[in-house]
Image (cartoon, rainbow, N blue to C red):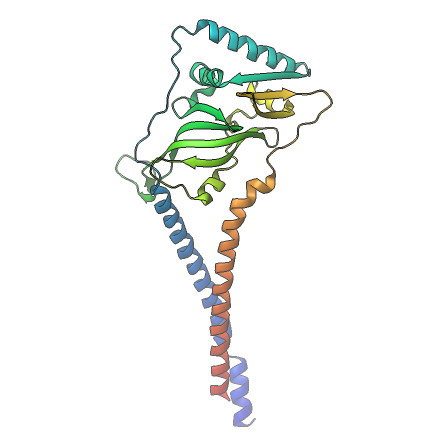
Length: 282
């Protein structure tokens, strides 16, 4: 065997290619981890620009001297519930005042109490005063906190403008805008919040959870929010799954493009390295 053949055989047995693949995989993993963490922290920094450190509690309707109104509301809700239970057609219209009264009075809606108030119905949309708790930027847990990682809560205090709709047998809010005084809420954040699953917690229970899958329509009519079930009609989603996935798809597309460009760069570097080594072995 001559010297040239020995050099060629040694080159073919070279572990460089295998090591290069392993190093590439490690570099890609490291890149994706660093990239994901960087994007996450940038997202938290962006959210901090239009959120506050404290909750600004929204209005809660007083129940004093509201006995007659509470009785009328309870009767209206019960008649609609019974119609749904028996499979009959039915319609329920709740005014702004009645919706706020229900939030204040019923334990079933206690999670909305102090965090959401129906301000008005205007131009076919709900205007809601909100004070939502959001997770803040991750940090090391303080003394007394459970776990290793903790965070300081942020609060979204402002006005949500939304339209009610149906999605998979559930009442949701299609968020059109979020207004925070003196601040601008990015469209990407608004899109990520829509549809807002205001009734997710009630899915499967005997009250609201029993009624929602039977609804054939929900909307705003004459200054009230109307829920209805019509004979011969099947429930139809007014918010599509495509709308639900739209914001998430944009994020994954961005991550995919970034990762692909990085992989292409690494591949070019490895290819050039292999070519140079081959020339050196020749």
